[in-house]
Length: 234
Ligand SMILES: NC(=O)c1ccc[n+]([C@@H]2O[C@H](COP(=O)([O-])OP(=O)(O)OC[C@H]3O[C@@H](n4cnc5c(N)ncnc54)[C@H](OP(=O)(O)O)[C@@H]3O)[C@@H](O)[C@H]2O)c1
Image (cartoon, rainbow, N blue to C red):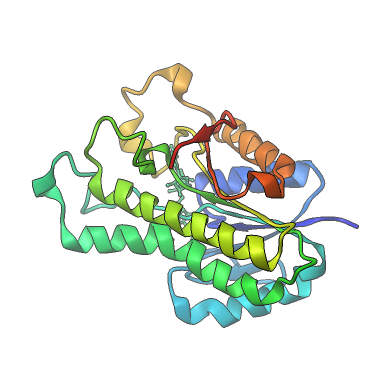
């Protein structure tokens, strides 16, 4: 039977590349985004709104028997008004809230939608795209307060979810992953002076994510992975 993978945040650069890679490898892809035409295979919804949990559960229910896993890609680093902070005094309450909303809530809302469909026999794999700069232990440079703080919060959510689903559904696995610096709307202002050898095309990034996704097991659960598949300390 064809395996189904849910790609959430499917309109983003990395999300789109993941979908192409999964389809090339023969997976059946369903998706969630704020954009696109609704269908049985695509839900158009804002995953930062907890009021949408039931709609997402309803969308997932017909696919649950073939659901192989979830790759959650939504996240934000800057917008037209706010850039990553260079120092403490640039930290703005509104942007901190917005960063928390977009970097944390999509994983929470999606997990709340999927959780009622899981049982002890379920074997579902889950990746939330996080960032190396969300690692507290790895932080040697400082700055980027709101992005770092919100990805650190996402990382803690993933650790908690791995523990809870490890009890509820021991065959399942839940991880966070740093995808590597990839040209996209999110990274565009920061890649101009970035070393070319450390800038990865979306296709390369997607193939690394999908290869970790297809090889991960329950014993890998509850960790933050680098795109080279090594473990980054939380
Ligand atoms: N690119 C990099 O170099 C890099 C490095 C480290 C980590 N990451 C992480 O990788 C993930 C994907 O990044 P990307 O480069 O593909 O970025 P992107 O092209 O800007 O895509 C961002 C995604 O976030 C969602 N999103 C953005 N603003 C939102 C808002 N206001 N409300 C709800 N959802 C919103 C979008 O979902 P829709 O589908 O609804 O539009 C989209 O899927 C992010 O979590 C990012 O933090 C990226």
